[in-house]
Length: 227
Image (cartoon, helix red, strand yellow):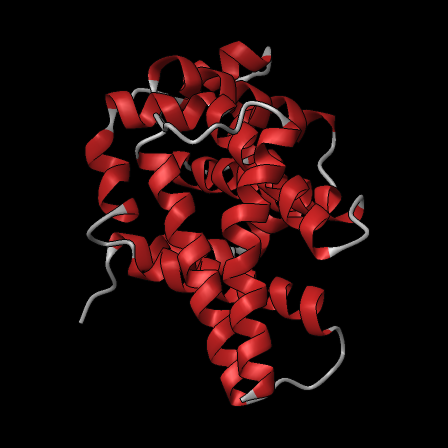
């Protein structure tokens, strides 16, 4: 059976084309200008209406230069999306690095995630103007994204809670359950950013984490450890 658009997207993000990845690992000035121009243009008119000519004009580079780095629009968009995904994961890693305990880790990571999603102009643009291109991958066809994000989140929680200690099957089930719930909450915030949950400040977020997210992790973790 042919892969769905979401499955193909996750495959490209988790195992990107080496040529695309090479541009992102250590981008030179030209590549950085092209990616910045592509992001700005897509934020303005959306991905569908963005052309390689638009990107060349906005970057101040010739079409031939843009095509030498990215032979097709699809390759450029792949690089752009991958760069934004890396920016998110690197941001959450920096947020966690400031934490000295699990609560702080969840607080700083949640603050970063909420801010990143609220301020991501391209994501907001696509949800408004090209919902048919993005909403299925975040809703009815979201299984591959849920699985991918859950796996990453579970790995992070395992390291934060258990370190190098070997986990039991019950603890692994617990980690995956909590990780999936966190993933689904995040997807909900993406699709429906309006919320009555007060996350305006770090202290607001700390109360939310302490009252809701932390118990979800620690209470069940304690019960699996003692059962």
